[in-house]
Image 1: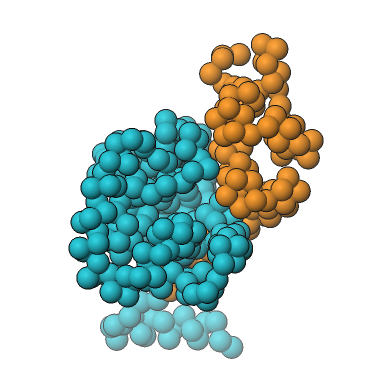
Image 2 (image 1 turned 180 degrees about the vertical axis):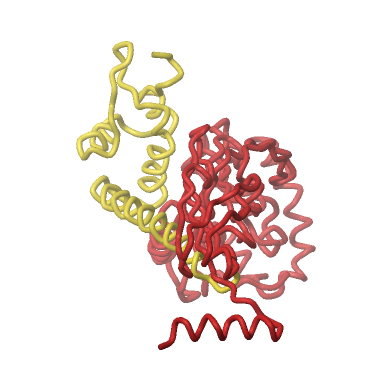
Length: 99
Length: 300
């Protein structure tokens, strides 16, 4: 595994001035996966956008871990429904008058 | 440039306390934050408005200035000049971050009264790194254009970006281009660029996912007697055998003659052709006679 694929929790803590417990709690509710890489707790770089979104929700909006969990589940539903809507809209185009 | 009522934006009276302002801002921010309203431009616009209102009203000095000159901001120039020297000195002393927002996220009214985004103070987050803002763009293509993988150069915020558009991109599909959004703040990573694809309708082919649909005219004689016709497929033409006594609205499936599957090179959907029977018009007397003969044979 390449070193660039992970970002250490301690870096995130330093960067965003957060306690490690914040990330542990996110891990406990299943919002992030903490991976031990070279004996250092890390998160995958692929998930950094979501992690930053959670940090912003916490920082900017004062949302606690449970709130972030609820918001993320609802956002996933919104994303699924948007994709479904888009797919149905595309199907509907088959029956539009301008054929 | 017109006056902006920051109190109205936050839904608070002019007598609101700092606590009331914070409470009103938090409540609206939870409702309008871009992370909670992805792809919602109206929410994004309103979020910028409440941020701007909060920037001004939560800072006692700015609030005082806004209350004093707000409606008469055009006459506040004298005041501004006196303040400017002091502000320039402060700017040279320390660069403050903007809480994830760029200069362009503030109204010209705000810029006029309080200077650029960098002139504000934001004591809590001075040393924090922030990811830059995500940008959104919309690109319109024809069906022909997305049939093949191709490159396109687009300009986003003055920067030219060369993109590879994979064949099979769908209408309404959004792709994310990492690091091509707004610049990170205090050394934070750049934001992402989200591109939404809009694909125009085609005059012959309709697309559903990877399958294509087309309605093809079929003349009466070929439909009755059978034969061979040439039909368009997306990348050319093919010859099709027509069975005798083919009925109107008969559908045929041409395997792998549909649209390329997104990011799966060499894979294609199917093409569905519906025959639309065309009866002859402008019949000659002889033709009418022959049709009458046929009709008599069929009708007892």
